[in-house]
Length: 502
Image (tube, rainbow, N blue to C red; front, side, top):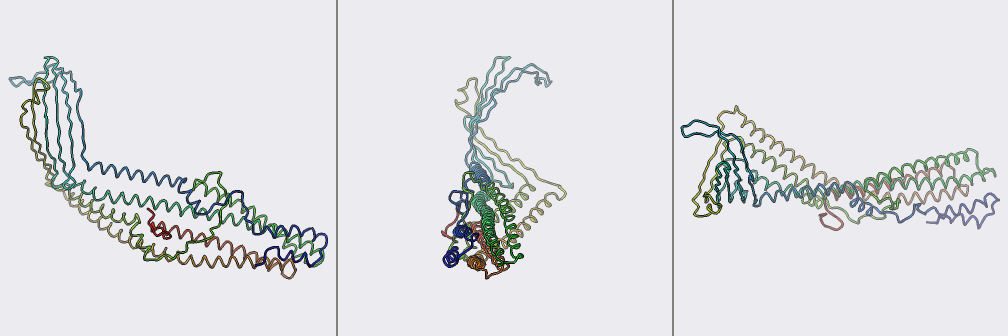
């Protein structure tokens, strides 16, 4: 392709021009030499990958995703801690009372007498939940001191050692269901965090191309303004020589005015797009405001089956399907466990003693045994229990149907996006070729107009096709990269590197 100034240099070597035209030639040469220069505001233009990386680091959305992940992590740690032994120190120290209290007399009558007492106790125990049964085993030691200040009497009692267990019977086992659901929920939260980061990339890419399109529109508007202004000055000279009609001159003048309006509008759109990108991505104010047009695209075609395989392995929705199914089953188990016979079996064995001195309770302690069975049997509830159980079963069926539909939609979304990516990749190549052809055609048309063998109408058509082809190319770039980041977000898989994103 010939350089922009080729024909102008050719003209200066072959033709003699009048004073006005000769004065315009240096401006024409400078204009032609600068046609391919990219306007910028200083600094190296930012690439798409750089802007995405900055958004991953500085955006508010990124901090929110990280905070959510931290919350889910501590919820997971809390669940893990609930499965481990718990050491607990409890007590009443002091437990002082001064009051009139009823006292049963030897003859069975009641008398209110003044008492001043302190009844303090201290217990240290360790408890271990049993996930399989929902019960717990425990071991403890207890010390109690009683002070009667009116009679100046002190007594000690306690259990040097005791072991036992508590076991609900026929009840809903919360521990067992938590053990099944909590790991799935935590895995889902980790995958959701990666998904949120990819969504940040997707959103940032959209704002990047909004700004890039505004930047390209401004570049074209400024270039068209320079071109129209120069051509208008040439047209004035040709009109003075009688080689151009008044109508064509006015059309060129109108083109200059329209180009000025387009440039002003493009500046406003550029500023709006810049603010939108900066606000979302958290870009520092000292970074360059110009963006680089992505020069290349990933040299790969996405296999639909592989994309679907990775999505099933990595997506948080898949973990969500499992979690929702388990939660529906949990609701049924809860309804069954909380509406039938309720019973609690408790038993403990240990040593106990009393004495006037602290050390007496540890001298020859006596055996201590305790066993208790508590139960509750509903006799008449007017169908309340069965209604609750049937409601839980119906909700389980509803959840199963919703999960199945979501699975179908999930798979269809992956297949559609994989196909769309490959189609957009081909269309981008076509738009790139059309952009190059339209620019070359406009350059030829402009040179022909300078020679006087092309009409204003044909020149404007070439200009419009050039601008439209450029915008179409930027739009195709946008659609391709949005499809690229969307596919990464849907599969949580880096198809270029062939590895998971977490």
